Image 1 (cartoon, helix red, strand yellow):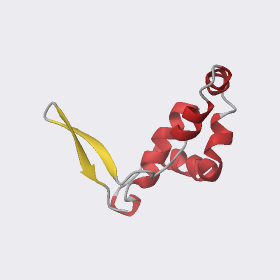
Image 2: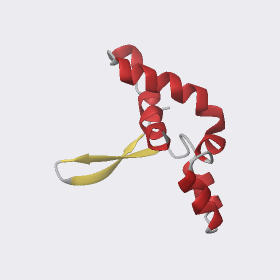
Image 3: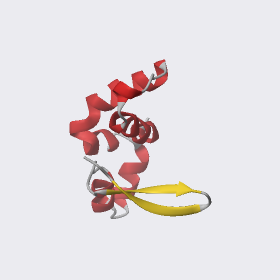
Image 4: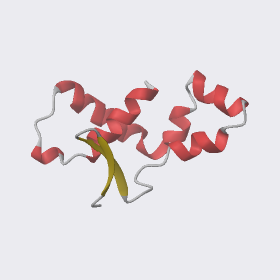
Length: 88
């Protein structure tokens, strides 16, 4: 479920009105909207997140739960990674 949250977040940020979503993508979007305001708490229900916190990586887990923290996003095109300015 935790890996799916990332996919759900991506679907949520797409211009949904310009796309026809599959049933799975629509379900993912609805599920993310339920967890959006409490991502850290949702992530912490997972065994691996709790394990990382036990190892001292709580701040890393918290950091990874941020959404739209940066105005750039990575893009992979033609074998090269570049940054795109995010319009939000």
